[in-house]
Image 1 (cartoon, one colour):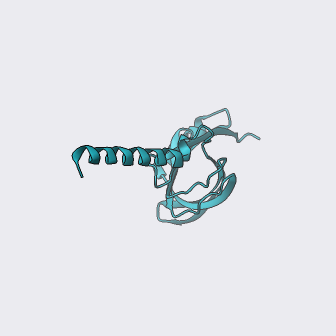
Image 2 (image 1 turned 60 degrees about the vertical axis):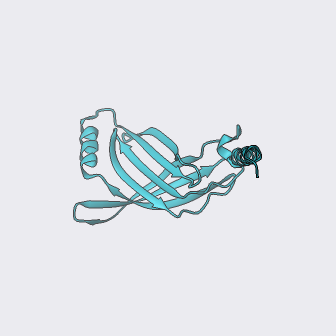
Image 3 (image 1 turned 90 degrees about the vertical axis):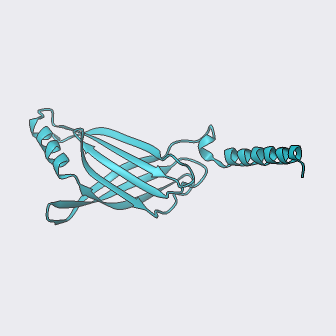
Length: 158
């Protein structure tokens, strides 16, 4: 095969591969919506020494027309701006298109972050507890994870 012909074949293959990649990637679609992750429950588990473990219940909502495959999942829960609970998981079931799934994961507590959060709560007169849940979903085929942040406040005075 001659050099100009080989170059033409390489260009055609590159174009076809790029077109296939762009059409198969739901994240490039203008109708793509970011998934939602909602914290539904935190339950303390048995302690081992100074390490406190928690069961974290999350609800993942997929508002798209393609299933959401999850290769890896990480999360951090901050209370009063201090990282209190962190965890990771892999091997989760895909979330169906226009579906949702409740998952339960185990997490470990950051002892010093917990102390700082308790100190902030004791020094606060408002009775409001600020929280932030940051989750990162790795789909496996896309290099960068999908980052989702849910934040709000809870009124402990009620």
